[in-house]
Length: 367
Image (cartoon, rainbow, N blue to C red; front, side):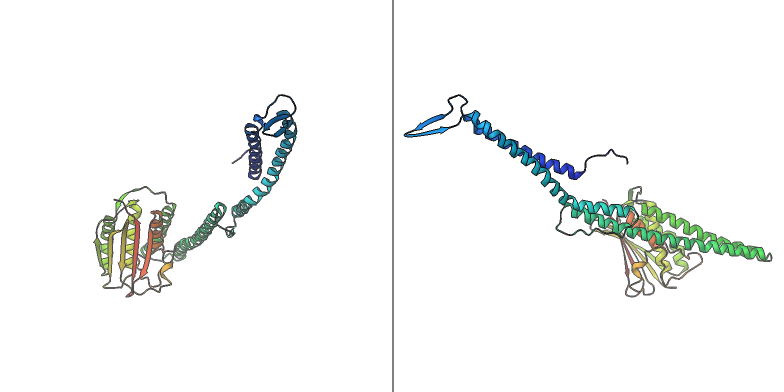
């Protein structure tokens, strides 16, 4: 934004200090005039005499006092003005020095260096509070930029894989015309389906991270039932028991994204389950003012150090069992985390002692 040049904050503070001292000195002189000098007579004779018994008090008239007092008052006001300007300039410089450091840090961050921190020392005040808030903002920005760079690198790698496979299949078919066309078309269809699924997941993850979502009243129990009904054939195919329990849990948000969140959690619980005889339990309810969705599944034991990384994009559990229909793209829990974050909620991942995972989603509840 183009702005007209103006005075610095230090100059404004200096003029304010000096003006305050000058006005205070002027008010002091006015008070002396009102309460002292106006009581003196202005007539001649030159001497004012008042008798108290045998004592005679002699003093000057008002005009003589004014002639002697006015120069001294003018010198005092000039001194207060100069002292206010000089002292105000020094004090303003000392008071605004933290703001100079913050400005330098802002320019450094604007040039692309997000690793710089102010770390202002001293007791808490407005400047220290601003400095701490700016350091916290830089830390979050640096973390988000690093996450986006890592996400972009992983996304390009994941998208390149199906495209490279498609090119290889086409090259083989071109060099060997005797190849089975039906088999080639089937393999190309599977590869392209995976690429489309990955692209849609990336778009959904980007949408959930923006946070500007349409808001409506949503019941998580209905969302959980719909997700479970959609994935019931998939669970039955793998001989996994899928149960939905609990009661109403109302929240405010995007019904489409919350349904995708629940679907991803249930699908993740089915895919990461035991080959036969596993269970998935979906429970909804309230906890204080929060609406809660819990998805718990059996499965193999997860290393504790692996659990916090499962919400990172393209991070797949080491024990994932893949199928052709649901090979996954490594974005299931990352999308869940983005949707929960966009709805101002929290996501908790807890490994079960007997194996499997317990996922707890807490969202702000509504009446």
